[in-house]
Image (cartoon, rainbow, N blue to C red; front, side):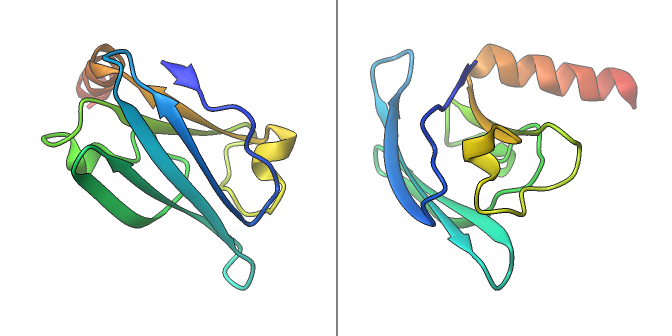
Length: 114
């Protein structure tokens, strides 16, 4: 698991990150001020997804787990939701890229708690 750093308060930004297997994930993060919400789009190989609402979530990409070897953890320091334009810049909200082992550990923790 590693955090994505360098996210600013720019309402539209694109960046990419390398995975352990050497492939790259391309992200677009956009903020909608009228909704006070962040949205994430990503591309990895031939897989793309557009407009996922960024919310506090142990794996934002869980619904795509059969297609992706990674996940995205959205951590909010105060336990609420990403609402502000500067949430990432201040560090209140962080995005983490999860590998298969991280995803399995999260799933096991949830199964153990239910």
